[in-house]
Length: 157
Image (cartoon, rainbow, N blue to C red; front, side):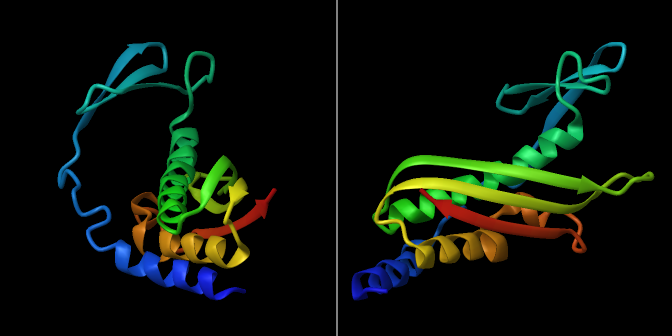
C-alpha cells in the first residue's frame, strides 16, 4: 500500500461533502395496465419500464429491484473511484438474488461481483468505495429489509 493510495482514499472522504444531497425529496411515478398481466411503469421524468408477470414482454418487478440495487452501487463505486483518480476502462456488476420460497417472496440474500479494470484501481480503494456505498450512500440498498444479507466482492482485471 503506497502513500499515494492512502492519500487518494483520504481525499475521497473530503470530496463527498454534498454527494447525493441534491435529490428530488418526493418521487412519483405511475404504473398503467396494458393487457393481461403487463404493465407500463413511468417515472416522473418520463422514463419507462415494462413489467410482465409472465416475463414475455418485460421484466418482473423483482428483477428491476435487483438491478436497481446493483445500479445504485455501481453509480456510487464509479463516482468514488473517479474522485480517487482511478481511470476505469471496464465496470460490470453481476448480481444474484435469492428469494423466500413462499409468499411474501422477498429477497433474503443478494450477491454482487464487480468486474473492473483500468488504472490506479487497488483492493484498498475497492473495499473503501464498496463500504461507503453499503454503509451510507446507496439509497436503494437502504430502502430494503434490514435482514437482507448482501455480499459484495470484486475482481480487478
